[in-house]
Image (tube, one colour):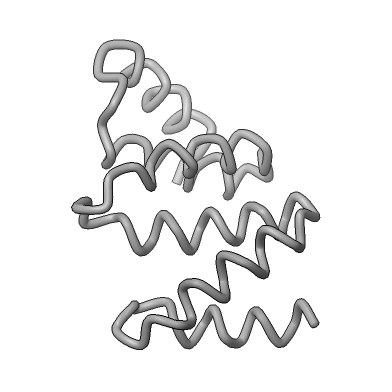
Length: 103
């Protein structure tokens, strides 16, 4: 996919629809893919204010990944640990694995 173009389109959409959880998730994903880790972190922080979103679990996991990529291992560890403590979270086992790599 063309992640830079998609990122531009999502940013344009957010100028009109500022609090759209779906767009925030996909924008953050594009930023993470494009190695814009600080931007991704900031976007996913906004996205996780929507706990009823179908992208909530993915957004939290991606936020932890963006912390890690941005070398903020303390926050990455904290969030992976939170996720890992919820067995029904679809990202619990991947979070446990990432915790092992952070140790």
